[in-house]
Image (tube, rainbow over all chains, first blue to last red; front, top):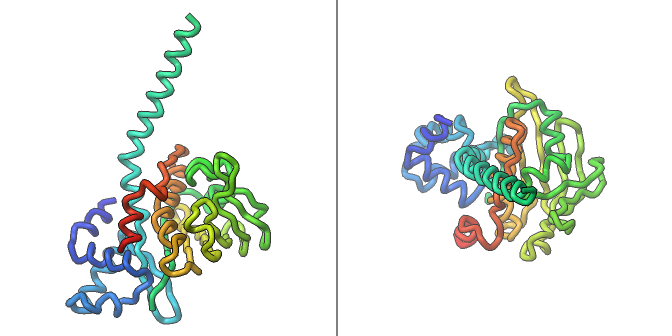
Length: 105
Length: 162
């Protein structure tokens, strides 16, 4: 999870993710185009995103295609959102138990 | 070259056989896959359906590959969503690789028509479904996310307009 936050804490890397959201399956060359950055630095940023699991890859012949992989972000949101839904579920169960007890009394 | 396809990846701390069961058993899918129950014999050529709680069919398709517990693929028609119901069938492929800590799961959704309603919807649905499967298998806890549904998903509207 540290890797995901570190990867996201950089405007260039977020811009790369934005570009993949616009169009999935881009090569490094396509991603370098229009970014105004050197190929090596884009490759380095992509490697950080890949290591964090935010970018997934597929090979098509000799071309490496890059895809946005938002699964780690969904996992992070779940970590905190879930706790609330869990608590709510428990509250509903408690309420139901209380009501049923009242009925028996 | 533009691609109307999605490639998702996650690592799940459970063996491939359990991940396979998570993908192919109604009791499991009901807990993380927008409350739908999968129904199929999981043999090539067999039909596959995802049934909504009211027993209507949410997704329908045909099994293409069923190599337990390594690879599963089927065609996909999104009947649940009126805007997507008439889109041509797309294809979903799950690849399960055993790695040290468990399973690397790759999900590829391709053969999508560019700009189609199906493409937009699956793009926002899969991350939640995959994260839900991971949480379920790793913690045994049901996690039914409120589906990022048609009408009430700001993310989808944003993407559709993008």
